[in-house]
Length: 266
Image (cartoon, rainbow, N blue to C red; front, top):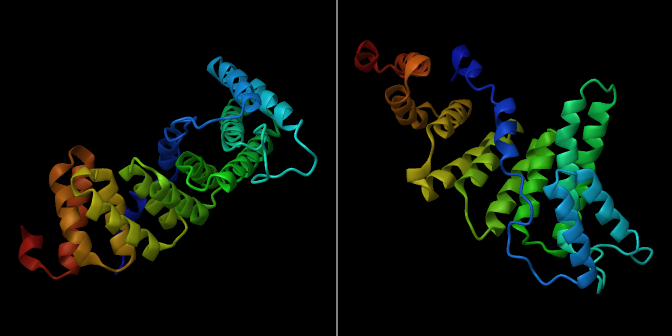
């Protein structure tokens, strides 16, 4: 079934979703584990600099600390001083993401995009090192997903958001939503729909109207207009202003396409 052209235009969501992902950026939000003294001191100094909005200084502290590790050491090796502790690599990744975001402020520089790209790739390596040591570290999976989304690697981002949801003690519906939207951006509509339907079954009363707008697009893309219809009716009723008029037009289009003549006339 064809999707109306005005419906397609209504879902140019990529720049908006990047704004939403920014709020997911976290530091060590989980309860701190026992950290070797040397690693703890490096983290303490780094967090002090982060509080003062100096991610470059914080990154330098952590990289200088890791430079002292035995040659050839890698995540998962015996590590009594914590050179490859998962919080060390997690915080390094966070510093890199902050620096990548701040590179937007230097748009005058010809190489600003390359700098941003390098920082994001470096962050990804750090988060992967973190979850190598602690595979259930939800915050690292979350920021790894955000990093992959920034690189437009939407398929990986969708999987990592899902992994963050699965490993988190606090099951946030937003994380499942971002997973579904990432798979949708990767044109994995079937996988996206599976996650959307899981989201609805788990959080029926917490689904936002803008999430239902995405779900409608997905149902129509999968040629499931009858499943989309109830959500379109809800959007046409509950939204206001220009958006409400737009959804009323979409609803009319669907009634006509589905040969629901009396409802279309109404």
